[in-house]
Image (tube, rainbow, N blue to C red):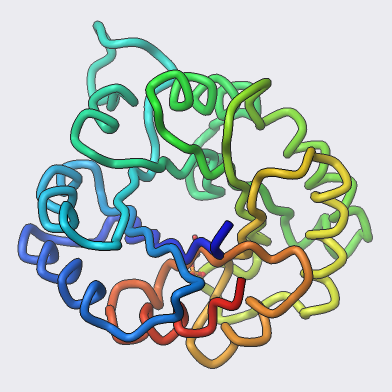
Length: 235
Ligand code: PGA
């Protein structure tokens, strides 16, 4: 599979950001890159339309574990899929910080798969856990409780202390964590790295063993920097 270069726009974007899809589609990026933009839910429809004839894929940032019904404020995975989106980010640390459990992430992933979406299940350790030398064990535990029982999915390893901080994990630590994750899951899921990925560090990160792509926050808000990251996709 190609490396997945995924933009997590978080709570950023306005309707005119649909133009960014065309900007990205026109940018020169490696043929090895699969390009994904995950906008806020209210923009999914506009972005799916803008991306319909391009190589850019659209995904959501979350979905409900439930089927359609009385769940005010939630978004049905079936609706996300019906709009033309193909992926959904699940269990991002910013959502886990609000109380989302591994069990809920797993239930969402299974619902997403049932609706034809490919979940990107996020895991990552806090700085305390890393400093205690427990990062690999904690992340693998979190992962095994969060992934779906069956179906296709991807994983994003995002150390919490590296998200939005400008602080990137050492390449050796990324390689070690990705190897530990690969040993714990069957071949199939790509293992993305996320946390302050920028054009300046993307080449080294994307060339690291078992790195199947990047989940990019801040640097994905401008298409020139996002495309500059995707340029370094190699497999
Ligand atoms: P960042 O965010 O690239 O701004 O660190 C990554 C993420 O939270 O997915």
